[in-house]
Image (cartoon, rainbow, N blue to C red):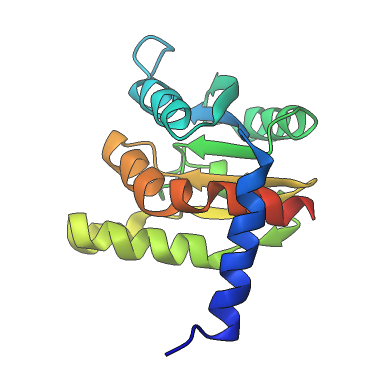
Length: 175
């Protein structure tokens, strides 16, 4: 059985995307309690990016305040990073504003990212996955991804969704 035209096209796109080399990725940790020294997500993602042949081009640690989320999004979207990855601030508490700010700013939404994240998260944590408001989309020619801040969620999102599509996402948003 030959591959469908859709899978042939996707394979072709991924082949082209693989030629772009290392992708610069900016990381934003949204937390009221972490410090750079205690930010396990930064340490994990920096190592994972390097292992995948990419690099951490910028890092910010901010409070979950709408003005800080807006400012860092605008600043990093003007920089070299092609992917900006937020972690934290995706829940439903009053302090969780990250998703609200990002969703208002995104020029194109990728609803499948949040749907898939909740699906793979459900396999690990059950119905508590419904609390996640993980999202992704495009803003000013960059891919913006926002995931929960728990280390298990960061690892899950990286391994199952982000790492396999990182080059493809960076390629698609720039073409």
